[in-house]
Length: 172
Image 1 (cartoon, one colour):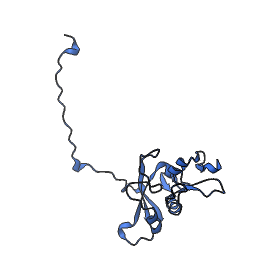
Image 2: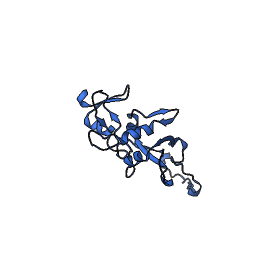
Image 3: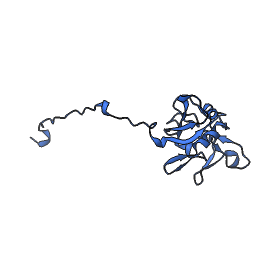
Image 4: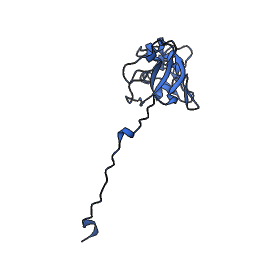
């Protein structure tokens, strides 16, 4: 009888049991790199508060259309907060929403400029959807159009990756 047809003895397989009581979950909320030294005003926090797990800037969930997963939560201090439970504001964002926001940068693996970006976003409505949270401005000097990243894509704006600027269709 050929070797491949011969009955082979069964190999005993031990089941691995994981004791979940000994597993320590790693939470991004505990990581100090996610706790930023930036602070924002309570008004900014209230204007940008979103329901559910969505991007603080565009208000869209992760993995929708051309948008990737959400990164965060980045914890920003709320400067004029009286309530003990609301001393930090959780910020979730898409990679593209962060990358194309001019005031956000990465320095020594620390996210910088987020508070400035949030303050700007709380005061800027999108020219397409009219909702707050827009952080992209047309780079043409005379233009006042502002967009969320996803709305700028939808409108047909051009993105210059060399200097991370955007220009709206009116000024192409």
